[in-house]
Length: 379
Image (cartoon, rainbow, N blue to C red; front, side, top):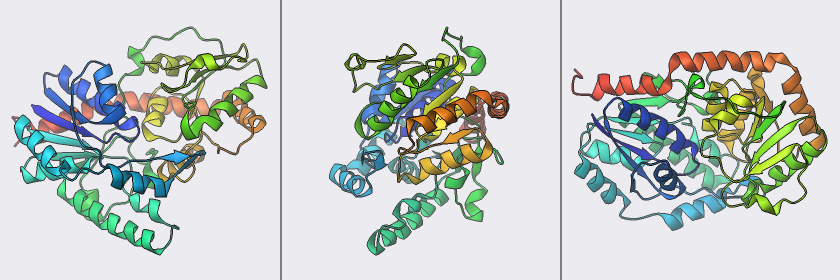
């Protein structure tokens, strides 16, 4: 087969899971083309694959630990490319794929339908209208229009792939809302992660160990610094903090002995396998990576980001970890970390999800779906 994978570049979780699918497809001998932009395109190229440059569709911005909704709308309109549609149509026609896979990138879907190609949508949120609630009448009307547009797109696609555990274990379930007709198209693949637990070697880390994936730049800097303050309260708990590519770890000169700060790690999976808990925002892909490695989650969802907050609520309710906020003080953060480390019930539940992720094998499940429905032997 020859496929195109179009990727929404807002948040690298879309990119991470598309790399997992691309790797699986290529390992089975299929030809894969990635379409991406911004940091997403850079990440694809950093791991050794080529990517076609595509126009962005949305732009999310934030400040002080919260999603800036108005700023995001303005940034999206400012960055919109009027000729984006024709560009995607030409790219798709030139490549001539057997199928198009779109991870929350909607111009790719429209191009596929115009060329009468099978199209598969990957998403972990369908109730995007939630962003518009409680924001005034004009914005609420925009939300209603958005809902109608997305429902029409959902009806266009051949399948909607949910890269999550099937119900009742679905972490993103509060972010999903479909009509009965569209529900017949759903395919719960299981977590779509780049590496399997048994493929990863453990690394030597002092125990107990917490891996923090909260970047120390932009509007998440306050919680990064709060985790540092938390680490100083108990030297018996060890931390690895990933600062992110925009922050030089050497600027932190007063680190306690139980903390190491790294700017960037190409492969986080050895840290997942070797740590006792992960501190992360509420992004879906990071949660899938952590849970598929059996590690409990301390989640700090971005304030005002409905999708992240809903994911974190499920983590809390199901006993996979704790949901905190940007206002949680270091002493309370430490108490929640101790609770997750000491209460074996958290680890028992996440271990069950680790085993289930292995059985489901998300990348393989999607590959077999594409081969069956859009491959040369498809009926």
